[in-house]
Image 1 (cartoon, one colour):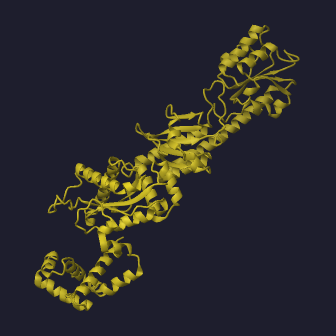
Image 2: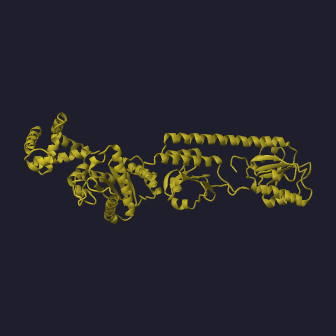
Image 3: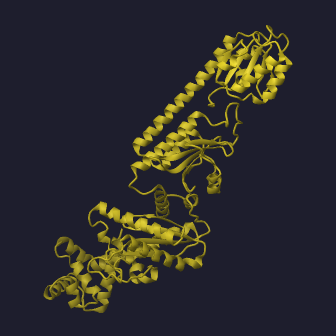
Length: 574
């Protein structure tokens, strides 16, 4: 029965009933039974006309005169599940109801109440029915608000966190969304302690059964509903009621007492909104990957407290506290190919790379947060229990990633590349930052990994994992790219040439200078790399020397320009 109905105890406290001087003579332990309706009866076989939950009023005039008949009358009422029996004294029974009725009611746990003063039954029925109707109207208004709120969320395309927040706000109860593996995808503690709510969640959740689509587990106090659509469930949404854990006892005629009907409606509407949102975003990242991206982005951007990131990661099954953390960035070696055929192709390549990284982590049996963190890179935050296992873990991941990509056909070398070296368009860079001992230092490792990956883009070595020592000067310049003094150095060395290229965009002398320096100041090799004839290349070099007022045959001057070019690339990298 829904909790909107008043209880027998509440009915006895109404003024029209109190006027009758009520006295409970049996079943006082069951006074919290809900009263669905009031029924007046003066015949012994009234049970056949009842449906359960009624509070029966009688003067006793038509009741049987023998003990067996009275016991049968009480038994029939108890069998049909009435909430209680109220007998007005003065007509059939002058001083009290027969002892056989009291004994039978006590044995069956049926509240039996005497009214020791005459009271018009119509006043009692009016008062109780008004209470019921008012409660039902309140429930109806709450239900209407629930439907409207979640309809708005569906239309607005609200994210998972907002749907969960609204469910917790409307119910005033903690709400948790989990996947089928009992990992937490989102939660709102409704003002309670998040640590206590999520502590040992997986083990706790596995003890909460779900019979059917929606059910209430009386032992744990959790209301649970399945989340999914089209016959494919992908999670469960749970609401703890009541927050205090004081779950009312089961009532007669009910296997288990449950929360108010509006909470069941609320949880099911929230689950429907989540399922609809997932269908709409079926081509986007999975919910788990969205949470991973949120947490990695939070670490990189300082958008959330690190303690909250660690807590949410733990609820997702990735423990970051007391772990050795290593930031890793994986990106395509040839940056210009990521968006080669437009934004859609670039996003598809990035999504494929993200899936390959996730599969490689699973194959290497590594625990990590992982997701695309920008338009070019997939970030990974490895959580290792043993700092000494860092190199071994990175090697296992890089090996698994190469195998996964080759198996899926995404690691094939481009035409003209060397398949044995793996540096074609399909090749990727795996860059790792320095290991750190706490979540608060994780950003440093991730940022370092990103900078190493950027610095290694033009490195033709086929290293399984790039670390800071591998990228040398380029890596150092990437670490210093935000330093104003480095930017001033770039402007001093190359500013005049950059201004010239801006005025003459078809010449692009900066590329000519780069080809000359990258080929070790070999003019013949530089001309070939720049796809120019040697006379044209020589003429351009002479023009560059005049613009910059330098001697390009000088080793010291060329070294300074080369460092400035590397620094310019670092400064320009997003």
